[in-house]
Image (tube, rainbow, N blue to C red; front, side, top):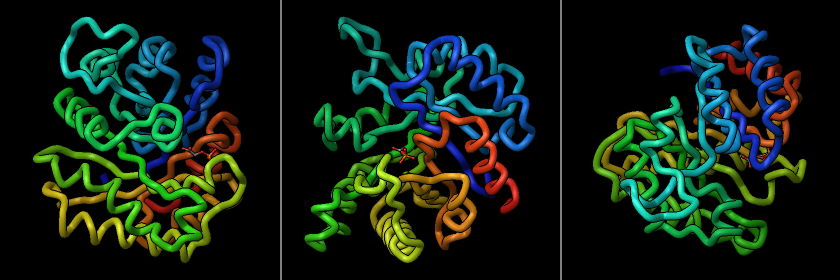
Length: 248
Ligand code: PGA
């Protein structure tokens, strides 16, 4: 799909009632009820929201998926097949918070990507450097190491989200020059190393807000946005979706 993609990442927020209200508020907005808009809700609410989104355009997304491929004795895990079963179109893989708090590594992330692809879900591989890595100057190397997972994938459609860790939830947005540099480097790396590299799409994430969405989305090689904090407010998220809608 051409145009910009917007995925809201609710992280560990909302309750059954507020999740429902948020989705209802988005469904009332023509700018949001679009096939290029997705919401990554907490796993426990996905089934209810999936039912609510039946027949509508907003896509359901999960925030994580198990690295185990099939059903079995894996207490607490949620498989790609389960996510597919309740209508998930996307799943985030390797968000920096998962890398930081759960020590997720490339072999696990490759398994997650492959499981999602096998279930027909589009995985969104999240990459990005910490402030320390940026200051040390080796941030491109860090990102290439994270992208290495893609060199092992043989087929299927996936997305990449570039999210500098220092810009997540901090209010510090990367400059448009920084975003353009990394997005272009990611696409070049993918063309050289990733197998199904026909249409590499890279979203930007990190303090995307109503006020900066349009300029970020207009930046070279930015194919959309992964929105954390601002996706919890229907009004802010609507304005971000509107900015994306203008650029079709
Ligand atoms: P943020 O989060 O928009 O709150 O910075 C982005 C993300 O972590 O996906």
